[in-house]
Length: 112
Image (cartoon, rainbow, N blue to C red; front, top):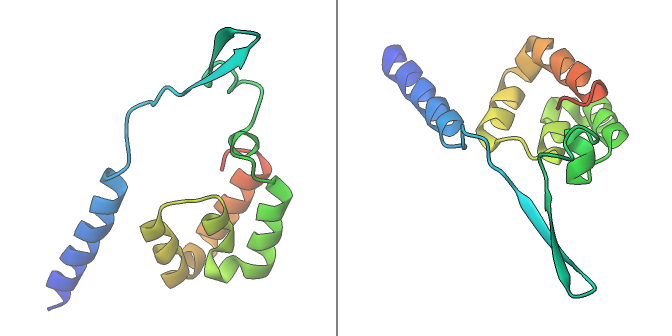
């Protein structure tokens, strides 16, 4: 019984982690300026902006959510992390605190 539960648990989270694109996605933004179209490659601007800055999310809001509502993975929901991993974060209480500290470090270094 325990083996079947463990196997189904691993299969579920494996399916969630493999369902996201594992290849680089090139995004382009087209803007029109005085009757001409300029295409800006998102990958070229990635050197200047952190992932949170490009998505319009504030780092300090994420840190505040981590501090006050970290048990409920509020910072992970704010940064739009996969649902299955957020639920696992809640169930394991932030990986017994280790995952929570790794999240905080990643948020403060703009790698989240």
